[in-house]
Length: 159
Ligand code: HEM
Image (cartoon, rainbow, N blue to C red; front, side):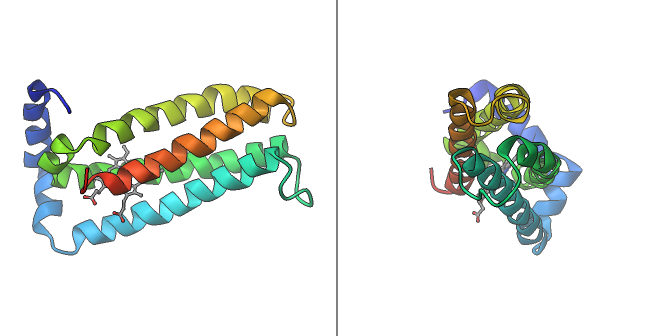
């Protein structure tokens, strides 16, 4: 799916110290992937807690706007861990990532997720009318985008 002209960049990543070290150390990939998946649990957990609250779930807790504000640092921190652990895994298997259709889709969705967090989530859920139609749209988009990122991550070795 990716243009052949990008292949040298992927090969360069694979030949860096990081790529070679992760590839040549048996336990490194599974250890890094463990942190990737723990951070994924936190990210999807916060996304669901905040955005399902927009639809009225968990009324005994704080209102959606307040929850969204409180959980945003958790979302951003878990995303930071996902990116920091994803890069060494990708560097260790550059040809798998280059040939996978899921990999570029996942990267594009991550960019979309980050942009939507800093725009519509902040404007319509954190600072807007968290019960309104726009907040509901932002909530659905957030759940859909981050779930698809996870699915595309799982798809890297297969598609
Ligand atoms: C720049 C950021 C990221 C990079 C470079 C990256 C890269 C990778 C790589 C290389 C793998 C291993 C694929 C394999 O099994 O061979 C992986 C797995 C995975 N990633 Fe990421 N990732 C990133 C962020 C994320 C985010 C934000 C999520 C979720 C919201 C995510 C979810 C997953 C999942 C679910 C797996 C599959 C784990 C498994 O097979 O059990 N990743 N990622």
